[in-house]
Image (cartoon, rainbow, N blue to C red; front, top):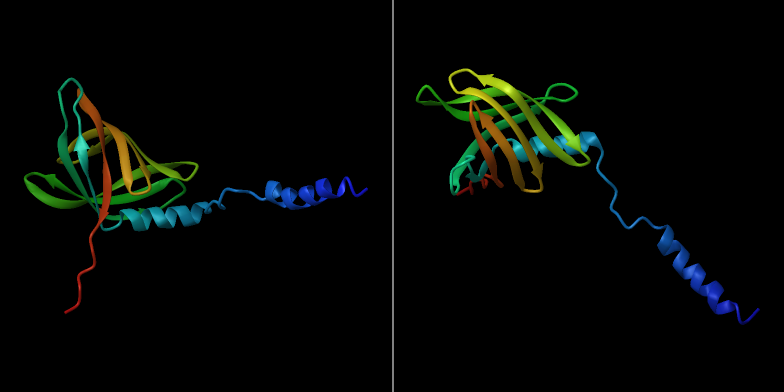
Length: 155
């Protein structure tokens, strides 16, 4: 028996490590949705976009006023956009789907009055976003970071 003692002790030490799940517990959907709304509300998406068939990329910015879940997959994202030469806050109803812990905005032929008709898919992960866009007969890709305004210091 004393020859088996080291093996028994080793099994006693290793078994709990094998049984332990090394992955952190995943947040539930409600928590993920709350975090997503907080991440986008008051944020600016800062990055670049490309246009198919053209060389290089151009700077891109989207100011998000708020993000609010309104139904199962339905969200209202209010963004500041140029429409008719003015900047206005436009609420846009957008389905958001989840791939595990990753939200994906899905627009298909969505017409925004004064702006145009768009198809787009946008994935958000951490402080980054990336996606594709289509507007009429031209489209491309875009990507960047999510920037939150720093709170103003009190004097």
